[in-house]
Structures are given as C-alpha cells and as structure tokens.
Length: 256
Ligand SMILES: Cc1cc2nc3c(=O)[nH]c(=O)nc-3n(C[C@H](O)[C@H](O)[C@H](O)COP(=O)(O)OP(=O)(O)OC[C@H]3O[C@@H](n4cnc5c(N)ncnc54)[C@H](O)[C@@H]3O)c2cc1C
Image (cartoon, rainbow, N blue to C red; front, side, top):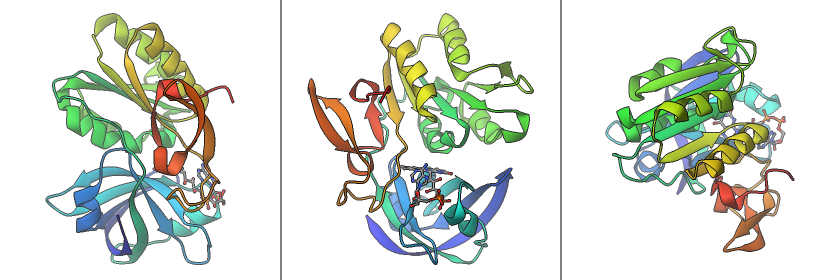
C-alpha cells in the first residue's frame, strides 16, 4: 500500500457524469488485485472518497479508475485534468478471489458497479460472460470493454431501451439455461446482489459480492463501515473496507 500524488495520464468522460482516469502509479499497479480500491483525497474535503480499481496494467504501470458524480466530492474530482496529480492511498481492501483461468465465470454489474468487474473479465477472458444492468440506454457504460474480454456480453435495461428488458437476474437465469457456470462475481445495488445470491444458492454456484458502504478511514481503523456478517458459522462484525469490500455471498446479511 502506498500514499502519494500520481500523474493522471488520461481523462475521458465515458458516460453521463461518468469519468475514467488512467493513473500512472507503478507500485499500486504492481500490488493491486481485482476488486480492491483506492481512497482519493479531494481538495477541500476532510474524508477521502473510495473508488474501485477498474483495470490494472502492470507493464505500463497504470491503474484505471471510473467514477460517477454522486455528490460534492465526486463533482469536484470530475474537474481533474490530464497531467494533473491525484492524491491516492491504495490498493486497499480485499478483492475478488480469482480461481483458475479455465473456470467459467459470470461478472454481473449494476450501473456504476460495473467498473471493478473489468479486471475480473480480463482474467477469465473468453471463459467469462458479462451481464450489465442499467436504467436505460443513455446510462450504458463499458459495453465495448466487456465485449473485448468476454465470450458474451448481455446488456439489460430497466425500460428495454437497449438489450434485454428487465433486471440482470433475468439475464443470469437465461444464461444458466445454456451455459455451465463455475463462479459469479457481482457489484451493484444491494437488492440486485441479493437476487443474484439467491440464484447462486439455488444453482449451487460460488458467488462473490462487492459491497458498498459509507466509510471514513478506509483502512479498518474507525468503525464507520462495520457491519453484521456471518463468518465460520458465527455472527460477527466485519469492516467493509478491510475485510471486504468483496465477500462470499454466504457471509452477507442482504436484508438488513
Ligand atoms: C469500496 C468502494 C468502492 C467504490 N467504488 C466506486 C467506483 O468505482 N465508482 C464510483 O463511482 N463510486 C464508487 N464508490 C462510491 C463512491 O465512494 C461514492 O459515490 C463517493 O464517496 C461519493 O462522494 P461524494 O462526495 O461525491 O458524495 P457525498 O454524498 O457528498 O459524500 C459525503 C460523504 O459520504 C460518503 N459517501 C457517500 N456516498 C457513499 C457511498 N455510496 N459509498 C461510500 N461512501 C459514500 C463520502 O465518502 C463522503 O464522506 C465506491 C464506494 C466504496 C465503499
């Protein structure tokens, strides 16, 4: 883990209020695992903002982060330009557990939950399938990226303006009718991930979920992101920042 100011090599607006930053940081690129995050200092804000590492390029010593404007902090961050420096700590948290490259994986993203799944689909390559859900066509991001890596990319929109009409759970049920899947990775709204966890349980498929929770330090030193969970058959408290953000679906209480 390192804290420092790193050069933004490239900034792109890849969707409505969604920005992609390519950051030069050799150490973070070398240490990062899929699903980990960085904590970003934004001028004028006391608390850093957590953003997932979307892509890792060890050879070119870069990481990619993708964020949506959600409030004042991310709005300010959206003004950063290429050649500026960004103050980040990372990599933080526990990422997705990747099994063998030959395994057949499905990545399922809901909206801005899709970026951390990019490096997972890159790992499994053409043994992976992506199911991405958005409100409507105008909100779709990263379709081209997942199409490059995955065997198949299914877009779902709530209003049917693109791809399948309805939720990603419909897309998953359809995929499971024709493909044998070993593992599911998901990131998005809690209700969506609960639906996916239910399908994983019913079909006896491994499933890892990336949880989002308000956090302060991002390193397990404060209690802001502590939440009730199940581990080793016991109720316990886990920190989303340090013990997660990625958990086995069996550890999560989705209803609370
Ligand atoms: C592990 C993790 C990974 C994330 N990855 C991404 C990502 O890849 N792309 C992306 O767009 N967003 C991501 N988020 C959500 C992102 O951190 C929030 O949208 C952002 O912190 C909002 O800051 P703000 O100042 O714009 O909003 P405000 O609402 O003004 O923020 C106020 C405070 O609440 C906290 N806060 C508000 N919303 C959230 C939230 N949903 N999660 C955590 N803290 C919040 C902020 O840190 C800040 O302290 C991630 C969150 C977590 C926990």
